[in-house]
Image 1 (cartoon, one colour):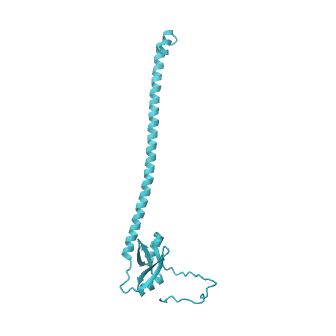
Image 2 (spheres, helix red, strand yellow):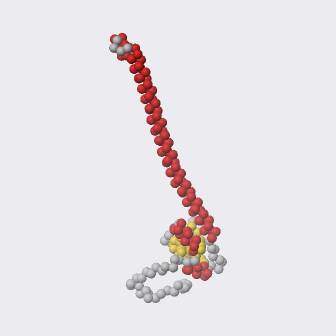
Image 3 (cartoon, helix red, strand yellow):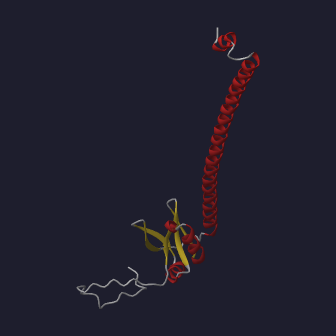
Length: 177
């Protein structure tokens, strides 16, 4: 026997009041269930929104990488198409440094003059050297400076040593060893 039944028998509450209390109690239980389900739904919606935001950020990073790779491939294709190939009479070894290594490219006199005037430059990609027009080398330098192996900019670096006994003797630019 429940407390409510005992109170009814004792006459402390009437039947209508007991029924009202039962319905209120049932409504509260239902309301709590609805509130709990709304909380669960809200948490699920928040998790979905966070996951969507994270996916959007990952997609943006992936798209940026794909775009950069596409631009890089386009540059490589343009470099290979615009590359100037030294002729068969290329006997002059042109030394240049790339990544702290001295490399040699065989060219002819005409190409050597253009290299020394800055009209041509050398770009190195995937262990291959390409002779390119100076304007294209400048564009490559703006895009990927680590690809540019040689581009004459007209500035001479003066390294003077006070104790150098040969400091007064200039070496001619056209001297061939």
